[in-house]
Length: 223
Image 1 (cartoon, rainbow, N blue to C red):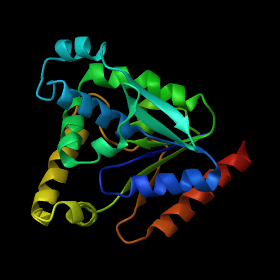
Image 2: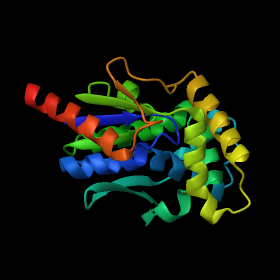
Image 3: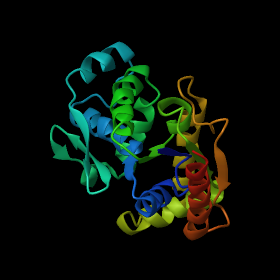
Image 4: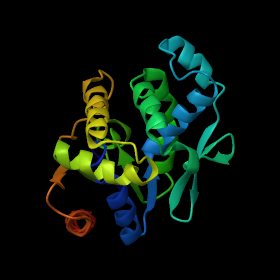
């Protein structure tokens, strides 16, 4: 079974997706990490500001990114190096967001993501899992929250490592990313028609998890 969880930054996707996968005994795929790995490669190799899709397409033929299942989750590697420690920052996230609007980048990662879905039961988290990557997924969720709440959560997450950061800066960055994700012509951020939409603004992780578990188990019993 493939379960997809899409939604904007700050909605709580990562936490809930990991918990859901662990509860179900499914593998977990964070597709945002794949895009961030592309962003990291672009940063290191001087392609972060490139706007030509033809140039990006040619460059991607030389980029080696893989996702390997390890202990219940897919670990992302760039040239055989685990990149987790290098991709969880706003700079790389911004580069990844810009590049994700390009067709060559999405095409480059599409087959890799779908191969993960062929490996067995999977919880896949991202922006277009239910609409583009796994349109036939048995269960789809779209997790969202009010803008102010998402900004607050993101601010609390980033503040320890960036004491100079302000809530207004985080809110502005999120608004810009939302604009790119929702406004792009290719695979815009939007709920799949058959997705269960959950607003986490006023409910905690445990309640969101309970709602998702109930839906997945209901779907499993129906098959």
